[in-house]
Image (cartoon, rainbow, N blue to C red; front, top):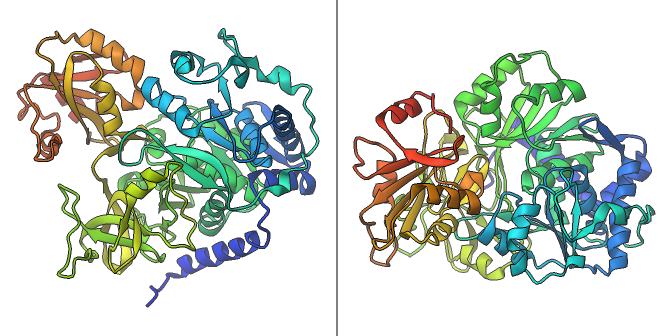
Length: 589
């Protein structure tokens, strides 16, 4: 028996289904084909604003064509990859669209990554060519000798500081590239990979997700047209990194589907947020939970005198939701739940603060698990038990042949996330690693990420990845990394319990320099606990339950405890005074 939709949910599904029906009438579509069609149907409509610059759809398409024709002439073939390691810029969108028009794939590299994780990311996408910017050059040079590329396969753009290099200056090459539409654009098909987008997932180093044209456009239809009911007259704000699905896979895709206008920002700024809203007359934005809190904390805001009407996002706490909507008079805030590698979505069309949606979409399930071990509870027949209202359980997405689940580029990693014979014989589910709470009338709220990841500074942090890197520091014998909650802060801060190598002296300053050198800022543990020993389980895994429960509570912990001073970029002793400041919201994290 199908669940009964609320009137607003029914409207969302009706708009979404109409959009998908239109999309599937023509299988030869892609991100690049949308750009090309908009250049023909809306040539003078402004497509993109960046700082004080702007491009019409016609102008943006010409820049895209330069990319297509240049890489075609270089011999880039369908299915081959160009890795992009760039900060947000218009060129990012030109590149991904141009590469897409020739059925090649853009591998989107997180420019915050360093050393081991960065090498892994490049190796994973196996690019034929690499494009980097000036900001990324120092980190790239640290690992380039570990990659099998010649200098003529590496291109540089956006290098205002004139960082020295021996690679090819892409802007010089593009000056003579043709601006005509390539003949290949409509060779694209919906069910082919357009992008590799990395996610930390639940274990190990980042994993590349296969993002097909179909999924990217479907995301736009469910969130932009279905949920937010946007129109071509909306002005859309992109202020999160383009290497994330949120920015390029949702917000930019919405812009393409609508033929609307987008405002791209190099990086988010709470200080400049309302200035941008007023300057460009922005009406819609995608958020992650931290962003509204940062904006609320800014003084001297315009309060209710602005054009921002609608917001869609994830991770917004109930109290922040209510404060933000009331203070700034936002007409609609829509929370949703989904994964980059997932193929199902929960959405809160009725705007109930604190909820991520209702369990109305088929193929979603909540299974009861042991909250400490993550083991699934089974019934007498050996199958998982579905949650009832009041239960917290593991979110599972059903995988069927007709679904557009594509998984990771690494098929072995995909298989590790799939579960068989879950609720009945031969069924197949994807384990999200997310714990959700089921409420009455099918409402669902987010409970926690289980196990080996946590979210901090709008990024997913893999504990295994950080542990692997910390363990490479000579004075560390083993480490356990986990997330801990901090009052009045979104997500969880990283904490590392480390057992030292007794034969090597531990130097805190050297360790501080080490983490700066090898970890993105959001992965650096905020707390480091120096333990005499770490508790080991039967399967020789470090037991983290007690460590998580004790957090950084100085009344419980008697081990030396250090705190990451982000302004000094070094670890300092975590004192009672610092603890009180942290509890009272006076300590900058």
